[in-house]
Amino acid sequence: MYRPFPASRRHPTIHPASPLRPERHSTLEMVKIYKPGKVAVVLSGRHAGKKVVVIKQSDEGTKERPYPHAVVAGIERYPRKVTRGMGPKKIAKRSKVKPFIRIINYNHMMPTRYAIELDGLKGLISYETFKEPSQREETKKVVKKLFEEKYQGGKNKWFFTALRF
Image (tube, rainbow, N blue to C red):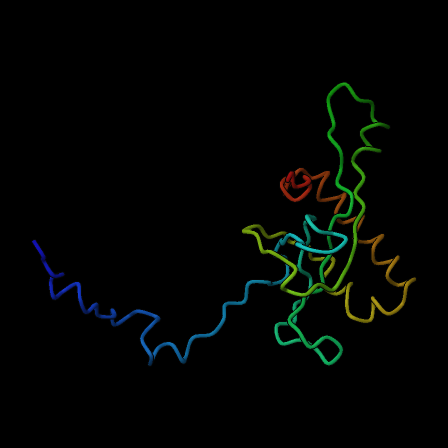
């Protein structure tokens, strides 16, 4: 026996507070996901699968880079596992971090729910840092020191472990 849908289900109405309503849709803005301190994972390129921290973001892009991008600092080589039976020299060697700094397109990053406070990096890395190789190396040394201090502090453990996939 044929039974049509009830009238209430045939014509759904849009709730007054719904973002799909035409008058509300035009005023919506994109939420800024990549803020300084936000942890993301690089999706493509040499550093694919590595975790990075956003230092500066450019949602509209610049003249040289006309796409949304972020200046990031990340971990190229993660610290290795340490056990109680190891001596202080071995622990020091295994606790080293190798950092990298890059400007990455938003399309090649995936945000995570985590954020890290890195106050020392905000004024340190800028677009000029990437133009001079010697300045880049100096910046990487400072980033390395900051990352190793964070690692020794025992906070943000997730950031200092490699992704397994």
